[in-house]
Image 1 (spheres, rainbow, N blue to C red):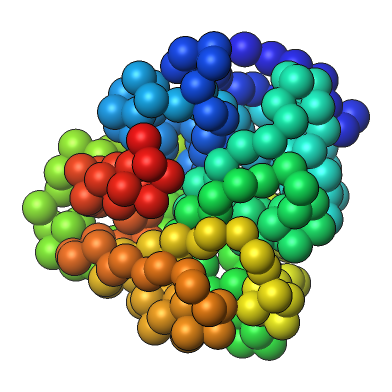
Image 2: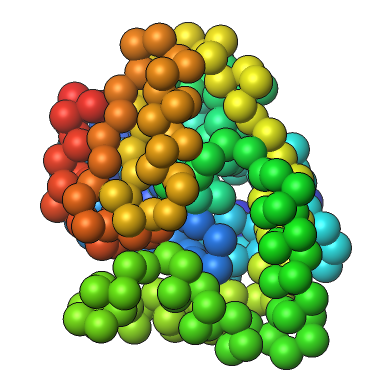
Length: 260
């Protein structure tokens, strides 16, 4: 389905009972709302689910230029307003995690429980440089030039070697991501820091990360230590797109935390 919000047209899907609590799913960079298909199938009996394509991803409009998390967060609030969603739970992986951090800090009254996955909460001079290098590759040679390096970053060697069915699903998502969207959102990921204010968040927070997701697992444990009362779950064997690597464990953790 399509709707206009914050000046662009968004692609989204809604499922679940009308009177159930809202849960919003937010995708990672270079994926789309279908990364949540298994969670949607498992949770649509308990929640009113909104899965949407972030700006420049999937079938959402992809304006040129550099995006910021201020814009990506404003997108969500405009989308919620357009759909009549007053308050919701949140679940985001990677870019969707960072979007959630920005939202809970800047629009706290619009959210309830936050599930924040596979993101360290900030960029660094080193990661900024890496994002700029990826942006240059995308602009010069398109998304196919980033496919293999992205897969190798996102998934441990044993998963790539086993090549379960979701590997091809993700490869297709990467290849079909608009270059404008990749460039815009990579710019946001290369220049953000939500860490200083996260310890002041009053909402219930579940941090979740794939065990094999590089340095993110240890960074997220630090964020849990910094936020009193928050919870942290490591998903064994999972890489960066942890909800697709360990869907049953991910969904169980989600349900246990949200009470679905």
